[in-house]
Image 1: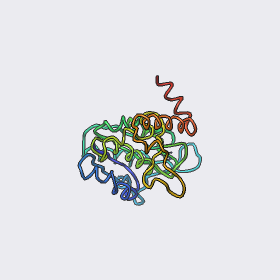
Image 2: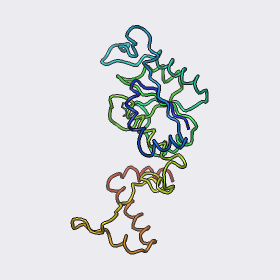
Image 3: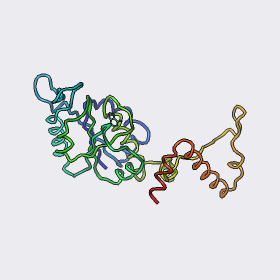
Image 4: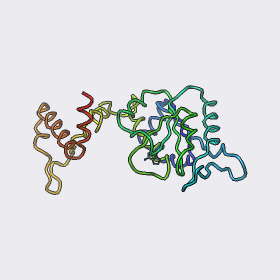
Length: 231
Ligand code: ADE
């Protein structure tokens, strides 16, 4: 998979992409992540990338010119078509199902904005879909792009050491994950549940299913509604 990121702050990505599973996935050649600075495509003495909104109002809007030119440059480096995604709080909520869907693509082109948002012609002209990582406003789309990359790359076959570990993740079956314990058996007076020490794998699996369901009921009842509507 190739992931292009168009951003005004490519340096923000260095540390998150340079560690752990994402770093290993790049070293293994499972994913190539290419960062391109939108400002390199701005013109004029001040290399302006934003301007005041038509119709008035607060804040600044990302101009279409530098984004289109940056996009066309990136496409000239790699003509393979890909999913074009704008990171914006106006987008569809990012969920595990979307991460799974994107992990099956050969190419993603993520565009991170700053300021109040993008000139609407960027979305229209690039045929971009919009993704939001949650109902809050970040200072830009960079962190959201990193979230998307993180969630997608760990799903690429071979990215995780233990192939089973993505299967059991929270959300992969529509529920939150069950509680985990490791050694020691007792820590500060808190004991590992007896069932996990019993060696009875059938009972352990049942306990985990019950715990998943109970946690979901308590903390995310909306997920149970989503699951019911899928059936
Ligand atoms: N940019 C600013 N806020 C965002 C959000 N919640 N999701 C995606 N991109 C954003």
